[in-house]
Length: 94
Image (cartoon, rainbow, N blue to C red; front, side, top):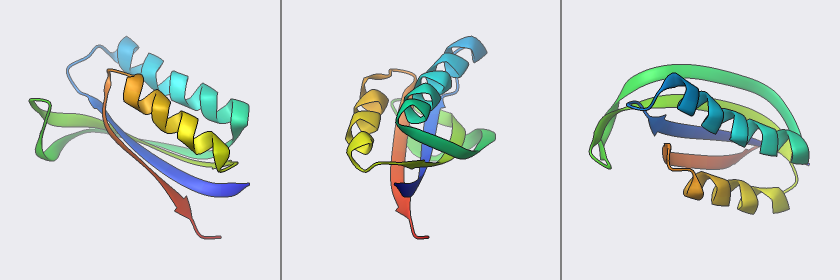
């Protein structure tokens, strides 16, 4: 298993319930295929540039361990979840 960190930016105009559902969807997938070490809720921040007509986004960070094969599916989940504007998954060195 490798260590990873993912940052997702969610649409800031959606309801808190929709935002929490999107975050739980991602966390559940990670827990099924690895283990979450740390989560950090950064909150609403101004974006550096407009994304899909949004000037603000809701940032959420997850540090986790998982097999490399599961990252492809995680990125697919990010792409099909409408509430998520942007995401990145990076492998961390031990």
